[in-house]
Structures are given as C-alpha cells and as structure tokens.
Image (cartoon, rainbow, N blue to C red; front, side, top):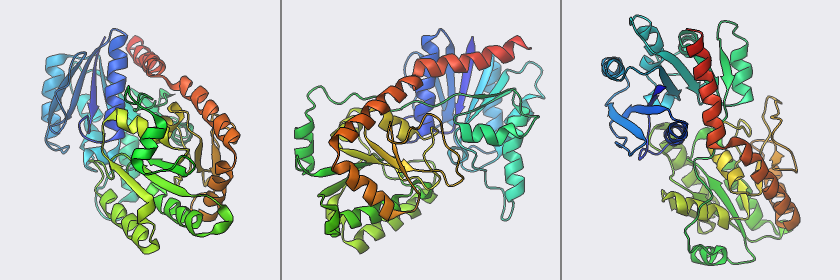
Length: 392
C-alpha cells in the first residue's frame, strides 16, 4: 500500500501535528506501508523509511498544483490529510482539496484526521461559513478520523459524514532520558532541592491551555502559608511553536502576569530542547499540571506525554460536563474545575503531602499510556484505509 501524508508542519518545525505525522509515518512503514509526506518548505527531507517532500511555501490555492503534481507522480492509494487549521495558516485551500481531487480521473482515496475542530479564517463575522468549510473537508473526504470522543460526538450528528472513525494520538515524547540521567542530580542542576515540590507544565503556550490559572495557583502556593509547600514550576519545551501566531500575544500576557505577581524566580523555562532532555525534565518533576480551559482530552499530545512518563497529573474537568471513560479520577489523574486557581492550588498541595497517591496516579498513567502505542495507532489507521479501499 502506498500512503501520502499531508501536514502543514513537520520536524524540525515545532508542533504536535508534525510530530504525530512523523511517528504515524514510521509506524505505518513498520507495517510494510510505503509512506511519503508532503509538508512545508520549513520541514526537513527526513530519512528512511519516510520520503519527505518539503515543498509547500504557502498553504493557499497555489499549493494545489504542487500537491496534484506529486500525487500524479507517486500515485498513492491513500492521501491522508492531518488537519489543524493553524498549521495551514488559517487558509481554507486544504479544506477544498478533497473536492478538487474528485475532478481528477484517477484520484487516491482521501482520509482526513481532525486534530481539532478549530475553523479557518475567511473574513470577519464568517463563523457559520467557517464551520461549514470544516464540514466540507469531512464531507468530501472518503473517510474521517477524529482523535477523541468529544469530536466524535460532534461530527456524528452529521449523518452524511461517513465512514467516521476514532483513532487516538500517542505520546510524541518517549520516556527516554539521557543514559547518564540521575533524577536528583537533574533537579540539583535546575536548582531544586530534594524536598522541594517541582511542578511541570509541558506544551506551547496557548489561550486554551489555562496557564494563567497555573501561575495564579503557583502564587498562592508560594505566598499562602496554609499550603506548607516549597514549589517550583518548570515550563518544559518551546514557548509558542511555529504555527499559531496568537500564541505570541498569549506568551506576553503570561510573562506580564509572572512579573506582576513577582514569582519569576520560581518559574524555570527550559526552552526548546532535544527529546531526551524533555523526557528528563518531565521525569524530574513531582506533579505535572495541565489546567486546560476546555478540560482534559485525549486529543492533547502533552497530556499523552505526561501519561507515558508515569507522572502524577492534575488537569481540569470539561466545562460541558462530558467525561472521558479512560480518565479515572484518583486512578490516573486528578481533575479540578477550569479557571479556578484556588481549586488547583488545593489539589497540588494535597498531592504534595501524599506521595503514595502520587505513585498510584503515576502507575495508573503508565497503564493508560500502554493503550496508545504507535503500533496500535498504525493498526487502527490501516483498518480505515483498508475499509475504504475495499469499498472502491
């Protein structure tokens, strides 16, 4: 089988969708699939087993010609779009690509994976049209994949979107610190004492991530004696990524809040570092705090990485009341209301005093992560491919 993956970002571009595409491609190749990738010119050519074409300068209408030329040359059985609107510059051209391909005599089957359901920018006050553009991407594709139960429920309400499958994402960061890794030594290098509480946050800064809630909770933990903890916050990874320009404004907001509260001496930034250092930083922490404003979801690669590293995790309930069956309160995660610094601080302080619970949560996290191996993800993706190819 020949599969061509399309992604707006690909390593070394910083972004979860690019990392996902890389891992999925390698896992598919391990199953005997011939995998090619079409991506931005900022991507890399890559190494075997993937054939990378970093050829798209702009994801506007001009990208069609380049994509069609590559498709004509490679003649893949499957063209699989990895969709996150920010990775395509908020332009709708990628949304209409499946329709354009339907005008081609010998076209590949088109699959789209929605990494989120954010809509592209068209023009001011175009919200309904923008949502329809996302629906068009699903309607004109031969199969649609979502990564989580929430998005599955949203798209399932449209009977014309078939077939519709759920394939989860995995962790883009394996728990593989440097060979010489020593946890106490790593913490000492960070300036964190053995009895201090090291909190970790992983991922780019984005308005949906609730980082201001985390900073406010940190301020409470530092300044209110009732918590009786000595906390540090380790911000792991790059700050804003390469795709979403709105992240820069949000970063400035967070930096201003840190200065206003005078907690900068307790906030440590790693910046973008190699994967083995990301892993070491996560493993050095006592509690991973991910206070998403829209609630914990298995579509979050950062959450999946925390599970893979067996961390005690504090995150947030979904505001719409939807719960994911895999997330077990007190079993593999602790959940608090979003946008609630007091509740977040109390949950962190409780875990600081209960090492046995932290261990229990970490063990539960590791068990959950085993369900989302890249081999399993590749097998489920292949099932989607084979289904639509057999119906041709």
